[in-house]
Length: 116
Image 1 (cartoon, rainbow, N blue to C red):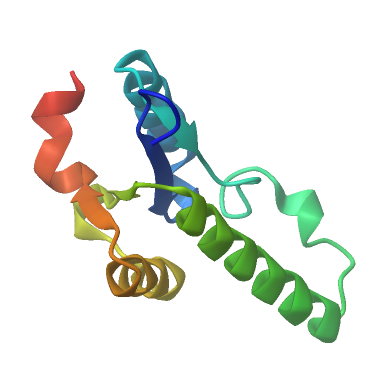
Image 2: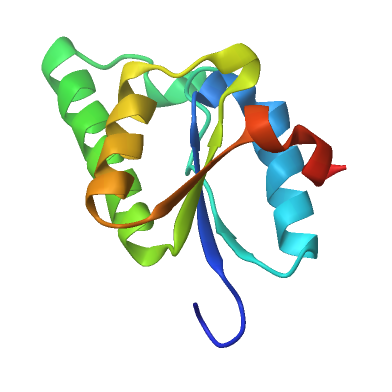
């Protein structure tokens, strides 16, 4: 908590950009501080990956994954955007990390009605 505001980090595949933006808005209006991804590499931010050699691409992906875990460190809980139950390897790793550090984990698939 920061003051009276819960801090929530969004996790999930960046292919779900529309849902990330929607959930971010709703959770913010519910009185939460929301931390999200820095870019949407699977849905629109393709220039991030263009012209990268394999080594640079790997280091960049590792950096982004590590940065997201630091965002989880700052949060009280994570909110997993798991459209149609989809959870990829990076998101699975983030969920495990959050659980191992004592964070509450909530799922879009279980709370869709609460987000309306």
